[in-house]
Length: 126
Image (cartoon, rainbow, N blue to C red; front, side, top):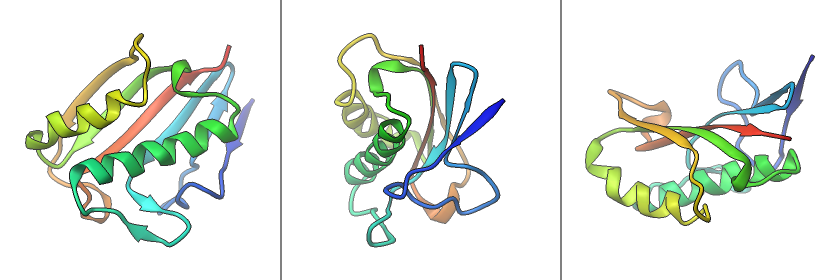
């Protein structure tokens, strides 16, 4: 049976999907973009600031599910351009303490609201 994960601190979904779903011992978090929930502001002052807001949104959802970044087993990073790869990597890495999750990073032709970064994760809850 699946259980929906919702945090009022993370951005509201902008479509027909849940912020997160627990199924068995896995948590699947939908792709997060750099919307600051408290103000509704899209953070795009720099790719680093954008990535930091994305990671903070992921943290809010992990907190709601009573877990943390150390339990993430897989991430998917979508970029508007591979030119952002190094900067995103630098901010992304700061949220982990070694034992990084498996990951793919791809450049796509477009992301919601014209953002540069979207990240989704899969978390092991055991």
